[in-house]
Length: 317
Ligand SMILES: NC(=O)c1ccc[n+]([C@@H]2O[C@H](COP(=O)([O-])OP(=O)(O)OC[C@H]3O[C@@H](n4cnc5c(N)ncnc54)[C@H](O)[C@@H]3O)[C@@H](O)[C@H]2O)c1
Image (tube, rainbow, N blue to C red):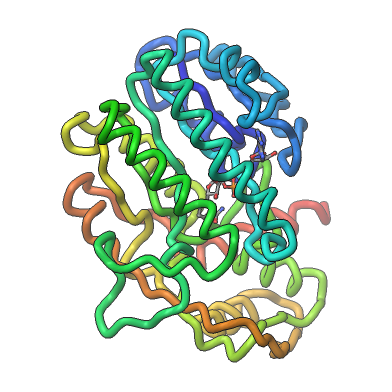
């Protein structure tokens, strides 16, 4: 099977490209399209010999790069994006260009190449700043709290338009916030950041009151959910949206800070930093992916914190 992973040098992509060859019995070819704007080329070192890899340094906004990357592709996993919601306020147009226009250009090229399966990495962040009495489902209203979320949601709408109009076989996965180790780990995500800060003896910075809810998922579980979606029957996943996470893994930010403080040896404090942004809190329901695909998380937040601490502990030897 021939895969194209856009953004394959990033946090999720750098783990996914390593897991794919072991998830499918057939011979696997993995093409990675990444412009290395935030991803790192070193994640391509020591790839499994079980698959054939091809790296294209290119941009999802450029037609010629997409044409080259999509040659003979069966399955596209679209991870490339500008990430980091805080940065997006000052870079609205760039986020729109990459996350929306880039996605649109990719869907158009997928259609031309007759791709069999497309997975779009969307985000639970699009639900934004509201606390409902019941947990947020795929049917709940969208309220993107920042330009990043807005661009991801517009990308999602574009994907679903291609499904409805052209029968392009797309599935949108609204991922919870990831944590845990991968070759391209990001340290600007809550759990990874708090753990890293505590490990170097810095205080744990909580912006705002810390009362806001977020769903979390280990990056290994995200990769497993992507693979399960690809393996699922077409009629079950095509044109569908799934929240990807676990009902047991919604936490308030200050709960995460407490967990990190307790799990890490250093004696650090939790510091609350004033934040004037509008409130952003979402507690998400993951029953759909559990009942339809049988997916639930294998890892807990505590596992992820301990895993990162262990990785750094190994550097001492
Ligand atoms: N990590 C999370 O917690 C999380 C949560 C929800 C959704 N997502 C979504 O999952 C996807 C992957 O997330 P991640 O954490 O691995 O992000 P990441 O920032 O680590 O990786 C994104 C990759 O895309 C590449 N890229 C950026 N612009 C590009 C362009 N124009 N052309 C080609 N490549 C480009 C970057 O160089 C990087 O390697 C993103 O679409 C993100 O919106 C992530």
